[in-house]
Length: 526
Figure 1 (cartoon, rainbow, N blue to C red):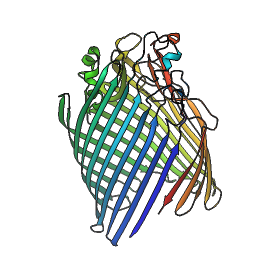
Figure 2: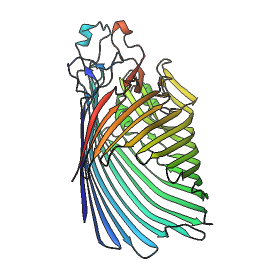
Figure 3: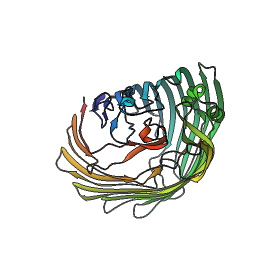
Figure 4: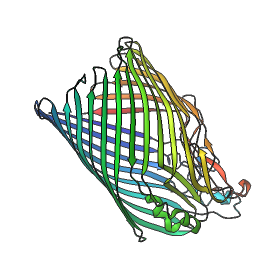
C-alpha cells in the first residue's frame, strides 16, 4: 500500500488598483489545491488506485478600465470563485499473458460563481466628470452547480513489441453524465432586475476499439473507431425547453515507420464528430435581449454538431546517444459546421451575448516543431515553434459601427495567432536545486468576429529557481522580466459615459496581461 498527499496554495493581490474603493486587491487570487493518491497491489496480477482532488479558489474579478490602464472605477467588483471535489477509482487486472482489463470510475462536484460590474464605474465617477446622458448601475452574475459522473471499462490485448505479424488491441465502453444548474442574475438601474434558473443535462455512451498490426519489423498500421450516443435536455424558469439525441462516429487510420537511426515517421487521417448542445448562458439572457437580437438568436440557442477531417504527418527522433530529441508535424483540419465562439454587444439591453455558432465551415492548418538538447548532464536547452493558419468561411454577427447584422467571410479565426514559440535553458545546479530561464511569444490575432480589432503579439521573458526534496518543493519565479505591456483580451463597444470621451461612442478596451511579477510556490507531499 502506497499513498501520497500534495498541498499547493497560490495567493496574490493581482495587478489592478480600484480608485473608487481605494483598494488594490480586488483582482486578487487565492487558490488552494489538495491532491491525494492511494495505490494498493494485493498480488502480482491486480492493482487498485484512488485519486482525490479538492480545489478551492476565491478570486476577485475587477480588470476592465475605461482608460485602458490598471486603474479601475467599479463600485461593485466581481468575483471568480470555484469549489471542486473530485474522486477517481481505478482497477487493473492481468487476465493472462496477453490480455488485461482496466476499469475507471470518477465523480466530481463543482460550484462556480462568476460576476462583474457591468457599468465599470461608481456613482461618484459622474460627479467628478460630466456624464450628460447618465450611467447605469448594474451587475451580472453566473452561479453554477455542476456534477459529472463517468465510468469506463477497457480491455487491452497484445504484446509490448510490434514486429512483423504481431498486434495490439484496445476495446472499451464509456459512459458520462453531466448536470449543470445555472442561476443567472442581472440587476440593473436602467433595465430592471432580471433573473432566471436553468438546468442542463447531458449523457454520452460510447463503444470504441483500436487494432494495431505490424506489417514488418518497421511498418505498422492502426485502425480505431468510436460510436457514441449523445443526449441532452434543457429547461429554464422562463418555460424554454430543448432536448436532442444524436449518434456520432469517429474513426482514425494511422501508419508508423521506424527508421534505422531510431527515428519514427507517422501519418494519420481522422474523421471526428463533436456533439452539439445548448448555449446555456445565451439562453438564460434571451428574455432580456432586445427584439432584434432575440430574432437573430432564436435559431442559435442550440448549436449543431461539428464534423472535421484531420490529416497529419510527422517525424520524431532521438539522436546523439539520446541527448537530442526532435519532433516535427504538419496538419490540416477541415471543419464542417465549426463550433466557433462568438460575442455580440446588445446596446439596447446592455448585454454581452456569448455563444457557440455552428453555421460556418472553417479550416486550420499548420506546422509544429519541438526540440530538446542536453548540452551536458546538467544543462539543457529547448526550442519550440508553431505556425498556424485558420479561416472562417461565412459567419453572421452584429457590427457595432454599421449597427447591423453583417457577414464575416474568409477571415482568421479569433485568438488564433499565426505563430507561437518558446525557447529556454534548464540547469541542474545540485541534487536538490535547479533553475531555468525562457522566452515565449505569439503573434497578433483577432479578439472577436463582431469587430476587426486585434490583440497585439508579445514576447515574455520568464525565470525560476526550484529547490526540491522528497516531500517538499519551493519554487521562486519571475514572469515578464522585461515588463512588456500586452493584452490578453479585447472588447469593442461604447462603455464610457463621459462627455469628454464621446459619451458611449465605440472604443477598444483591452484587458492587460500581468506586468513584471515575482512569486513563491510551495508544495508539500505527505
